[in-house]
Picture (cartoon, rainbow, N blue to C red):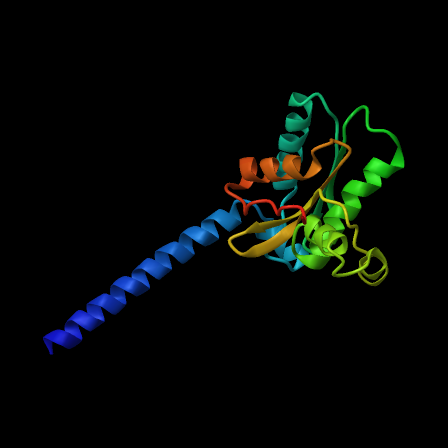
Length: 187
């Protein structure tokens, strides 16, 4: 009987710990998504909020300025729809604007950094045509998925800064907390 009581207490402690950690995970996710009446209106409970998207873009723009650079920054929701876009003064032409959007879309399609597609093409695993034609993927680093508590909220794409991927990563880290390490280039 004592053994069963210990087992029951141990199980209750595990359950309480799981409930607390699940509660804190939800609390963190809630900080970055649309809530309440607006979430009900769009029938979606994990859409990145405009405030979060703006904070991420602002952090990236501040990093670009600190490096003496400019950037185009696209924040997409989990369905690939544009939530927020910022084009800093000095960005030249449509190429750098479109690059930011396409990098973010690639991260939505693949649910991984756009560098992963770049690495597969560069290593000969797939062709640029394969990824571009079949998946509309852009094989250029600078797109990262936005993931909070194992939930894809969207993606960021950065173009024109000269350090696009690092700018995106540092902005996500600054706003959302620690992020997975960036992928290495293929050897």
